[in-house]
Every structure is written in C-alpha cells, then in structure tokens.
Length: 146
Length: 84
Image (tube, rainbow over all chains, first blue to last red; front, side):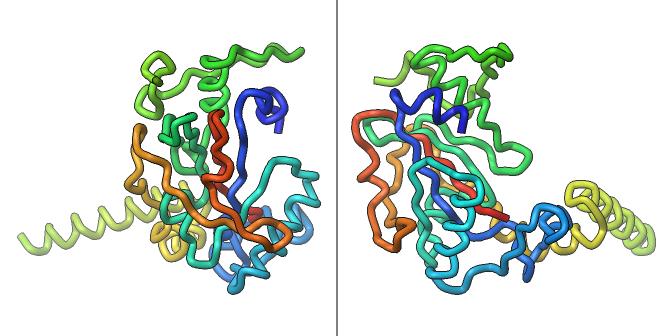
C-alpha cells in the first residue's frame, strides 16, 4: 500500500485476485486458523464464491488498490504463472518490463519499488527506507526501455 | 550393486522429504505442498520484453473488464495473490 501511495501518480496498479494459496480443503496453514489470523476459506468452486472472498479481503484490509478477480478458468493465473503470488510491471507499450519471482520466497515488492524509483525517482520516508536493487534478470534497465 | 542403488535412492528420498519439510514448515505440510502447491507453481512462458497477455477479469461488483483497459500510457504494476 505504501508503494501504491508513493507512485500512484506515475504508475497504475492493478491487483489480480487468483485461486487461493492455502484454503482449508487443501494445504491449510496453521497461521490462518480462526484463533490466529482467521483466514479460513475453502477453495472457491464458483466465481461468486471467489468474488465474495475477494470482497472480504478488501473490506478487512481497507484495500484501496484497483482490483480484478481471475475468472474460474484461471486464465490470468495461467497466462502469468502467478500462483501463489507474483509481481509484474508492464511498460507503456504493453510489454513486460519486470517479472518478479514466485512467492513466497522470491516475491519482493522492494524490486518493484527499485524499478519505479529508477524511473520516477526515489520517495524517501521518515524511516529512511532504502531502495532495494533489482535482480538484473528480472527486468530491463530503464535505459533500454524505448 | 542393486542393494546399494536402493539404499542410495532411499537416502535421496529421505533427504528430499527433509528438505521439503523444512521449506513447508513441517512433515505434514511437506506432503500437502507436494500434493496441492507444486502442481500450480511454475515459471510460466512469459519473459521480459514479451507483450503482456490480455485477460478478462471480474470486478468486485461482478462486472467484467479487460486487463488492457488498465494500460493507459503509464507503467502498470500487476499484483497477483489471494487472501489465504
């Protein structure tokens, strides 16, 4: 959300909600249980169920980013190999200019921040958050972008 | 010879299971990870420089739109994920 607030005047953001990573009827996580984070959902079998969970998410976290839900064919998930989580940046010409690693271990919003900082300038915060370096193989350099 | 190959294979299987257990957070999670997660995790065919595929998405009020509708002359950051 901080990233969105910092760069929303320079870049557009779109969250795409895909199939659940840890539903209760598949690989459930102890940390999701009711007495902890209370994120207990079965894998949606209908679009309505998936949209309902997505709505729960946006309401619970007051999530203000533009939002779209993947259809039950999982077309977006399959096209972008997104599961369980991934980040991309698409440039002004509709080409992929950054492809992040698969979550959870390689999912790194700092890389997106570094790309945006390289293009639009760094946004400093009071805690002096430093911009991370981006893995060279994950992106084109800004100088190569037409 | 075959005996040693079998032992070696057994050791390898145990080592892989231990590694998966560490990654997944426990032995039971390792089995669940193999069953439910690994089939869905892949690199995909997209590379930097490729055209971003257009897909149909559903808005929170149930309507539909195209991803390309959000390409409006600025870079577009896509954030894929789910609640769980």
